[in-house]
Length: 97
Image 1 (cartoon, rainbow, N blue to C red):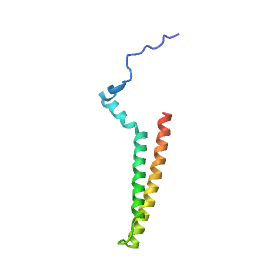
Image 2 (image 1 turned 30 degrees about the vertical axis):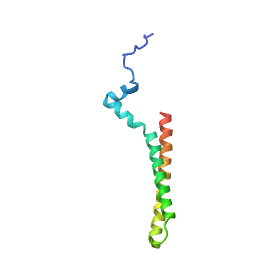
Image 3 (image 1 turned 180 degrees about the vertical axis):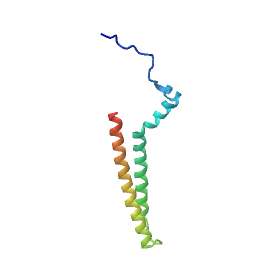
Image 4 (image 1 turned 90 degrees about the horizontal axis):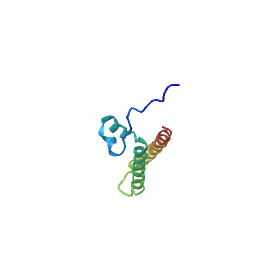
């Protein structure tokens, strides 16, 4: 039987020691799951504000401008939906790794 391999003393950094080397610093950006959730929240808030601005359009705007804003709202909600789906899959991938 072969003897068990001994540890070479290489341990994973913890705490602020994670930020001391360049490869460890790059690992920080792999927290893409949190980033995508925050970005999806920002997309949703921008979409809601665009919808609110479109609802509040009264006199002084043409029919064409109103329809352009409706199109902007529809596409912003579609982009938000896709970003939320991307965030969910990022969370699933993050949890499985």
